Image 1: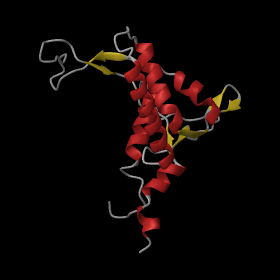
Image 2 (image 1 turned 90 degrees about the vertical axis):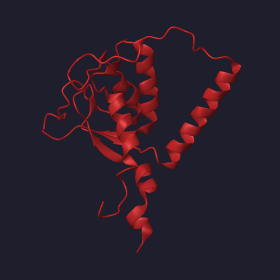
Image 3 (image 1 turned 135 degrees about the vertical axis):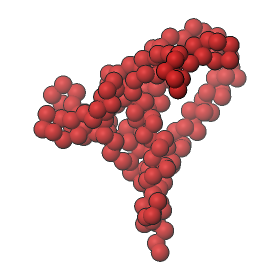
Length: 169
C-alpha cells in the first residue's frame, strides 16, 4: 500500500481544500449569481507552511511579552476582530466565485474579505434556554454569528481531522 496516497494529510493540508462559505448570520450557503457556491481555498493547520508561520508568530509574541506586555490596555470588539482576521488571513490561498466589486477576488484580497464581517457577541444560553452564568453568577458571552474569519480559522483547524486519503473512516 502506498501510504503517500492513503495517509498524507500534511500534503493535502498544504495544497488546501475548498471551503463553502455560509452567511454569517443564517448559516445558509452563499451562492454566486449563476448558482455556483462561493468558496475559499483554505490551507490546513497541519501544513508545513502554516506550522512555520505559527511558530514565528509564537516566537514574536514571546519576545513582545518579555519586553513588556500591553495586556492591561483596554480592548474592544474591534481588537478581537483584528486578531481573528490576522489569524485567518495566512490560511487563505484563493477564492472561487467571490468578487471584490467587479473583480474576482485573489489571495491579495484576503484582508478585504475577512474585514467584511464583524463578530457579534451575545449571552450564551444553557440547555434550558436561560442565560448561562459562570460560578460567580456573571453572564457568559459567546459569538452569535460566524464571521468569515471564524469560518476560515475553524475550517483550517478541522482539516487535519478529515483530509487524509484513507478510506473507511
